[in-house]
Length: 362
Ligand SMILES: Cc1ncc(COP(=O)(O)O)c(C=O)c1O
Image (cartoon, rainbow, N blue to C red):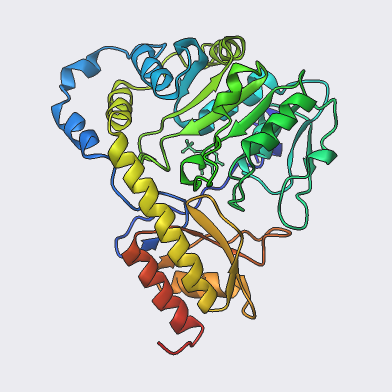
């Protein structure tokens, strides 16, 4: 608190990210980072960079990177907005679309940055409870919302809603901007029908839809800070107006080159996503044998609760063993620990620590 700050700053409740480790020897399963390195092409690109190109400011419009992302997702270049991590893209979206007379609606359990942006931009919001199975209950979303945002798969539940569900929401709210935060979409396992998992194909029909993505999770580039939004040209122009009133150059030249290298290596991308999905399935099964029930996650993390032992206690005991997971001391979440999916070795370390903590015989 300070009387020297703008008064509203005293009422902000900043987002608290999971702890980053300064020491080695930690099994770090607390911030949904990817256990596998970025594509080898990323390393090659970094090696080949000539420092002299940093003398100049980067392209304020990120033209090359936007074109690369547009071609990857089969949309027009004017439908892409790139920013310094999807957190920044989301912040601009809140500023550009949700400062309305009516409240913004989002689930009571969701990415905890959403209420933080609301307070920053003075946006009235309504948190609508997930149902008893932690699924979004669309019937409770008012027709005249000032905006709708949700993560799909949701965080921190990991629960996925089908593109059909999302289309129904768009049909019910044609005059409302609907943001679908697809930070974890690349970890959804395709179903047997091969139907679309992402909301991106819906962009062709719904000018009020925004889909946000990040390279932090599925592309193993959390340290780079690149995220993007795909939407109608009209909505992208709104994001650009906000961005150009804030920071002309949010995407640096190195990040732009490195992200393009990652998009050029589809085989590597697919194979690491598949490894994470396989590790998730194995971990869920192994946890079940230790007495944990997990929510049905389609993300690179799982929410698990033990049949008898309190989650806060398990979290603390794991931390003492240098295994970091996340614990949310919040209503409806305090019974769980959230575990980011690690490599096979990291998950094995986690399981052996849990066996010791729970005094299960090996
Ligand atoms: C649901 C969701 N959206 C967005 C983000 C932000 O990702 P980044 O800013 O790294 O792109 C996160 C990060 O944890 C997240 O969980």
